Length: 224
Image (cartoon, rainbow, N blue to C red):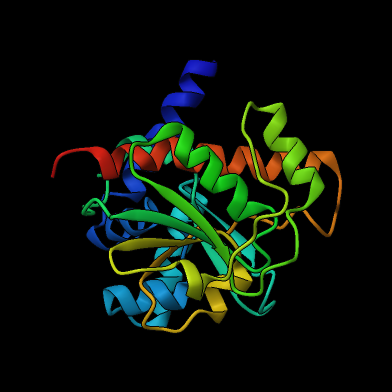
């Protein structure tokens, strides 16, 4: 019975991705999260058509949605991992460096840069739009539990870190929505663990980032 259910679920995913527009939406989400408005702008599709395609993808289990932690009226769409096998990796040129950005540069961006550095040959850095004085102690402890090191006294402002040739990845909704439109970036909508303040919340953020990086870093390191 479990095999039949698995085949049924897979068939629904492939059926949903059989439409060119829906496949294009899924390809966009293979690199990062996006709002329906951002998807419509990228594909030059009207709002009602984007809404229809997203509903079909959601019903098939291809995508999930979350509310923005910054602008609560906005939602972000993310690809569910089980849909990845049916998609083409996005074509991206290898950057000089990957710069992970969140608001305070005290948790998610720090963890992401440490994870990336452990997994990839492409250099990484982290920064904040409004950096805190110190890295959050629970981010430091979370990294240590997984064999990674964070300097508790080192936070940076994005304007002091970013340079030509960098790929900016916003790992927080606030940072994504506050960056100027001309800053080319990907967006990973990772929930902020700081308001909850629990070990579990920091572990959840770590696991989300680790899964995204394990899927994404080979894309930048594969020959084009």
